[in-house]
Image 1 (cartoon, rainbow, N blue to C red):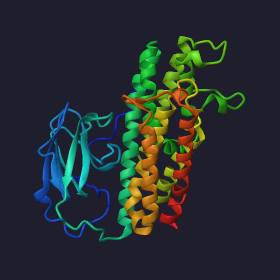
Image 2 (cartoon, rainbow, N blue to C red; image 1 turned 180 degrees about the horizontal axis):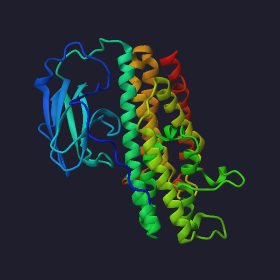
Image 3 (tube, helix red, strand yellow; image 1 turned 180 degrees about the vertical axis):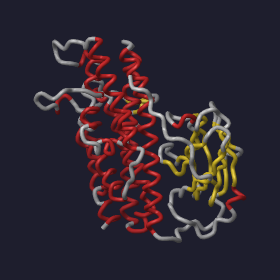
Image 4 (cartoon, helix red, strand yellow; image 1 turned 90 degrees about the vertical axis):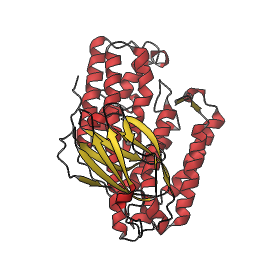
Length: 390
């Protein structure tokens, strides 16, 4: 099996500056040094000297007390969107993350080894300091910040995909089908959140995510769905024969190799505003074309995990450019806020523990409600690129 990729060394600037949420410079935020928070990143924890701070410029001074190169993230209230990050912090080294934050709820997390879900994820509250945080610079600064933060988000999701795929592949090769089935949907979430980015790498997407129904004559079938069919043979067609050990090893190894290739490819990606907005539209199209119809996860019926992940990805993209949209078309922003929220309410109603009901358990009326709400969101979302770019 392919070895987990190692990220680049920790030679980086002493100060990492990131622009948060508004992606701009505030008018009056006071002295950033008065809002400094110490962060101790160890092998097992991400300890902050305070769990709240006033809005404005914040400085997170991150010290690595562990033995691996680490990262520190400030996440938005959804726990997904990256507000700011400090990367490549070597053992015994300190880095400053300077961010401009609005009042609200956030999360902090450290990532020893710079891959995986991280450790010590904790709630962080920003209270209202009364400072004027309104935009005072060129809109290009907002765009640059949105592009940089989305790049960080994509890298984070693929890092988690690598770790999850390793665990999934190990279980599948070992014949531990129960564990592999448990890992299948939660691991694919990281893929589905950034699916439109993965699709930009030519043959990589079909090798990893092609459905059997979309196979062309003579095309070799590899990837997640080829393994899915083997893991849920009861739902396969009559006469389906389980794969032999050699086939299992080949499929799992290819999937992991392709995942590592994807990981390498995204390291140097740069994004533009239109790529972000079109990415959000594309992710909703993925929901409409496969997830809401139950065609994506034909044997496992875990389509709602994918559905949620696509919506997560689309919403992260939207939220990243929302402040720009408010300046250009506040009514469209309000409409999108409402339609995203209504769709999330429908998904929340289908949650069971950390996951969802199987798609095969949904009633016709529940499926219709999803379809109608996806369509209700698709129309205003389709206008996003034109409003922001033209």
